[in-house]
Image 1 (tube, rainbow, N blue to C red):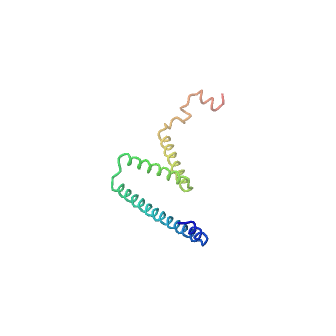
Image 2: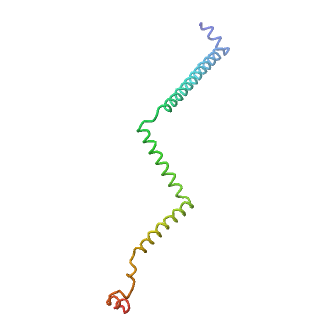
Image 3: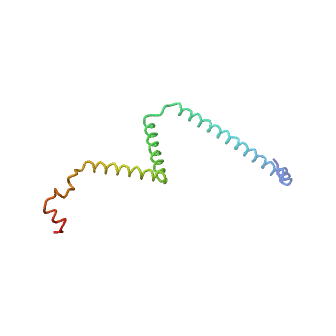
Length: 131
């Protein structure tokens, strides 16, 4: 391109329009390539997920899944224990256990232990007179 032609194109604005058109074409080509790349990556990810679903988990993966399930179960249990209804129910269950143990102790305790007639005389004097 001669200097004269370049000066004419610059003066008329044709040169800038050609540069902008070239930049737009390059940008469009980049965007198209990027979209194709993203579609290819998504397709590969889906194929990998399908492959993983078809393969049974190994023993280590099964253990990890069980451990995770246990942790989640414990977390759910602790969250539910914060609720008022659950607190009240736990309180009643604990009280029932205490009453059951106390009743068993009362039944197993010998009855004659509390009869003053069987206490030694020294003990009776101490209890009655305070000496």
